[in-house]
Amino acid sequence: MLSSMCTEPHPAARRAAERFLATNPGDPASYPAVADLETQAIEYLGEIAGLETPDGYVASGGTEANIQAVRAARNLARDGTSADGESVNVVAPESAHFSFHKAAGLLDVELRLVPTEDGKADLTAVEAAVDEGTALVVGIAGTTEYGRVDPIGELAELARSVGARTHIDAAWGGFLLPFSDHEWTFADAPIDSMTIDPHKVGRAAIPAGGFLVRDRALLDALAVETPYLESASQASLTGTRSGAGVASTVAACEALWPAGYRENYERARANAEWLAGELSERGFPVVEPELPIVAADLPQDLFETLREAGWRISRTGRGELRVVCMPHVTRGTLGRFLADLDSYR
Ligand code: 0PR
Image (tube, rainbow, N blue to C red; front, side):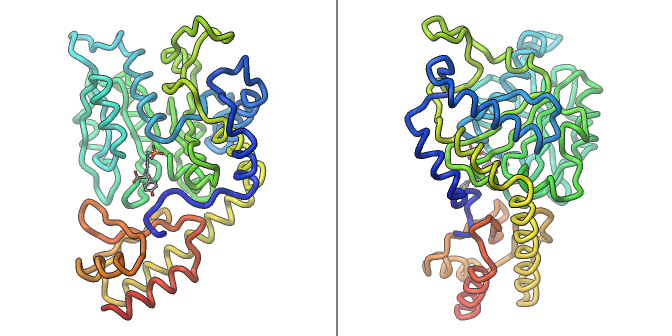
């Protein structure tokens, strides 16, 4: 499995998920144990993301967290309309995950996609795209296709210059970036919200997404009253939620933060660099990995043959082979993949 951003849960995360399978953090008054675990989960995620007083919740995944970021910014921006009465807009690099398209469609917000350079948001284009109606500027810390990290500080400054908020999508990158020298956290830049998914590199069980906010007002902007529950309001998008995702997040973080995640990062980085070198030596043009995703130009028929042989591989929008070096992807697996590739070319 070389195409997935999910991986085997850590054994402790698997056990915790099973134990909390029938609990619902959406009803904290009835399920107080899992509600306490959610507080712990958000503390872990906050620590990883440099958020001093962590607030947020464990979402169903990156899609929900991104939708909520757009929704909160829209709700707080001029009551959902720009100064001239037009609906608000969100500015994001074209590398943004398709969940932002879902968000824009659901929320009746204009999504302004700006070009990228070497896979990263082009700041001149962002500057040209933002205006008085911009509610949110999105930066990606680990893009889905190439693992690129946008210039987060500069994006946040541009957002500020027009009174917009900044959301960082670190759904995939969030458990890798603490060990690289990128600037991406709440401590590095004036960002307002973040997506960071335990069910990807965090090795929690699916479904476990992370939505973090610097200011409680963003969560309040999402809350609805819940008259027949003991708790008075609910900020999550889904109602009943998975206690398994919450409990397994805490178990995975207890087991792996920070040493285990650091080891994973180092191994993944070494594997990605090794694979990129091997593919390049064979004459396939490679996109240099920044975070551990390798993209390379392979002939179409070779790609198809490898898929038919059972390799789970995917392609970028431009058609390159894309290999995500997740925790389950070992040097041995990559060696066997290359051996197959050699035998078919
Ligand atoms: N943000 C980023 C940067 C992502 O890469 C993804 C998912 C999301 C948000 C959305 O997260 P959820 O899918 O948790 O809602 N990126 C992968 C993708 O859509 C997810 C994936 C996972 C793909 C497992 C394949 C797979 O087998 O391509």
